Structures are given as C-alpha cells and as structure tokens.
Length: 82
Image (cartoon, rainbow, N blue to C red; front, side, top):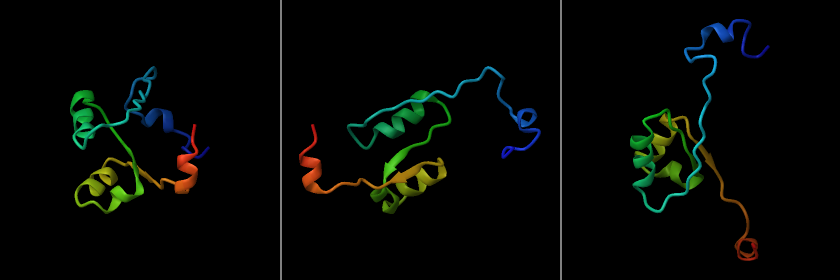
C-alpha cells in the first residue's frame, strides 16, 4: 500500500536481486573509502553522531544516505560490559 500500486513495475533491478549487507569495523579513517572502491557498489554507512560535524566527511555520509546514531550509555555502564 505505502509503496504504491505499481512499485514492482518501476524497479530497475532484476526480480531475483538481493541487497547485500556488509558489516565492518574500521581500523583507520581510510577504511570506509577503501570499502567504497573495493565493493564498487551503492554503499551507505552508519556513523556516530559526532561525525556529522566533521567537514566533508559528514556531508559525504549524508550524500550516501547514511545514518547517524548516538553512542549511548554512561562511562560507568561502558566499563561494566562483558
């Protein structure tokens, strides 16, 4: 209902297309850029909210339709994790 009555006719992907999901942690600031180049795909990111204020990087995440999430929890709760 929410997608519209002809949403299947408007898709440009084959009917058997599956959207891959890659989950990764990075060790340096270059890793997200390397993923974009290596995967050669429509890549999006989930970044901590602080990244939004970094010039160019925050705009790049927004342009890639990425999401920002707060890193919640108190310092005490973070130290008591298993």
